Length: 284
Image (cartoon, rainbow, N blue to C red; front, side, top):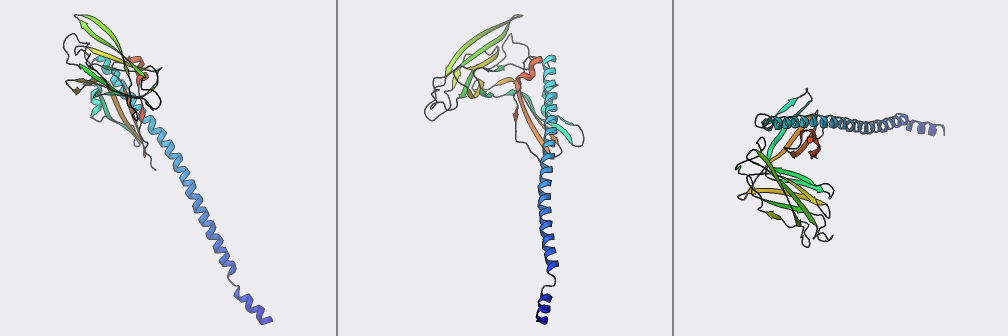
C-alpha cells in the first residue's frame, strides 16, 4: 500500500506548474482582448476630435472664399479675386492643418435645390458677375426649363399640385434703372409610377435683362427642383457661385460645398449658403 501511494503521488508532480501556465495564458489573452477594446475606443475618440478640427479648418476656408466673393462683388472685379481661388488656392495653417479650394466659380449650367417647403421658397438669378445691369444687348438666355419632383406624387394624389414661378427683370433705359415682375404657375401632372412632374418650358426671357427667380410650392413640398436657362439650346446660367473646400487635420478630411447667388446682399450672404457634407474620411 505504501509503494502504491508513493507512485500515485509521483504521477501528479508538475500539475501546479501546468495550472499556473494555463491561468497565465487566460489572463494574457484577456488583457490583450481588453487592450484592443481600449485602443479602439481611444482611436474613435481621437478620430472624433480630429474630425471636429478638420471641420472648422474647412469652414475657415469657406469663410475666406466667401470674403473674396463679397469683396469681388463690392469692387466689381471677379477675375482678379474670387475667380483666382479656382486655381487650387490653398492655405497651410501648420504641419497638420490646412485647406484647399477645389472649386470656386460663378458660372453653372443649372441651379438645383432639394426639399423645398411651401413656407420656404428658393431663389436664383441670371446675371453677369461683375457686370453692370444691362442697358443694351448682353447675349443672355432667352429660354428656361424647370424639372421638379414631388415624393409619392401619383399615389399620394399630388398630380394637380402647383408651383408658383415669380421672376423680376432688371434693366436700364438710358440711365434709369427699371424692373418688371411676372408670375406664372405650373402643375405637376405626374403619371402612375413616376414621381417626376411634367417639365415646364418657357421662352419668355429677354436676353437684354438680368432676372431674379423665386420658386414657391403652393400645395406640398417639392423634393427636387432643377432650373436650366438656355440660349439657342445651350445651357447658360451665370451669376450663381459655387464653392468647394477640403480641409484636413492629421488623418481626418472634411469637405463642404456652398452655393449662393452672386448678388445676394453682402450683409446677408451667409443666409443663402447651402451646405452639403460629403462622407467624412478618417484614419489613425
